[in-house]
Image (tube, rainbow, N blue to C red; front, side, top):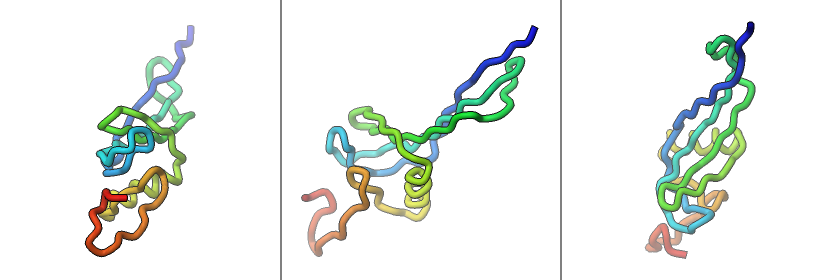
Length: 102
């Protein structure tokens, strides 16, 4: 008898300040990596699915992103970047303008 299956793991990669595409509020977003691994006799052997997402801490909306976008966001968080607005890079600020004004 062989026992096999899958097991999921969630890794929190970063916390970023972004403008939510769902509720429109500037809030913290968690960057998460979800890895699903194949198991044999309850021992995880190798990953066969990896997905990245961001989740708004204000409204709870979750958005799937590509691995390239996740790497860019993680690099921004490590470099002290300001995040993105609605999935696009933020525009340059005018002198004297508050960062959340439109």
